[in-house]
Image (cartoon, rainbow, N blue to C red):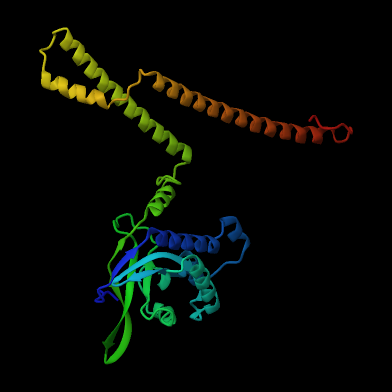
Length: 317
């Protein structure tokens, strides 16, 4: 299992595949592990079933293109596979393959993916089941276990090679190296997903506050540095310190990088943006106040109806 590939192929993996596999695993794990309130109302399960629910395995196909000795994996889709009976839903696979062919006519099924810590001997059954579509499929394995000490991606790509073991020819999985290949759209998407929630578990408001604090600190530092330059030039003009032409040239070069804030065009643009931000803030406050007022009216009507239902009077609003 730990042998390295000798095929000489170059593999390029796109981030979309990793995101799809991770999303597939997260959805299945969430479905198998409902909230505590739901679990409390159900029946207990044995340790084996609980272990499977905690670490479910998901299966799918990876698609892409092969140009010469370079295999590029672009995308993936899910598979319906029953590990207990080792059966693959061929009709579902053919339907998904036909749909992807209409959208991506140049993409072919290159192999399959799953989750786990290492390739298992039972994985060879689904690997052989896909050999009628691709005679040499690749196996992409994602390890969902979190290891903070690990620096590399928890993704391993395997190839299958025929080796003679104890005089019997057998197919075994062998490791192969790969590189991450991205396009501009994928870089934007991955960056957006990475910033959806802070890594420390904080809320979006906490993240925004930290971002604004960083901007404020940077502006404050810039202001202090400009003030130092101003004091230096004023002292040199008063002949309190000797004139140094080399320093003056450096100061002049730095000042040219600063935006011209005294122009009429800058003032107009600045006031326009400032007024827009004030208007947005004002509208947000009005919306918040209206929402709070509606909640208060609903609560008042509910309490008023309870106290006056016997008197036959109508609600306040």
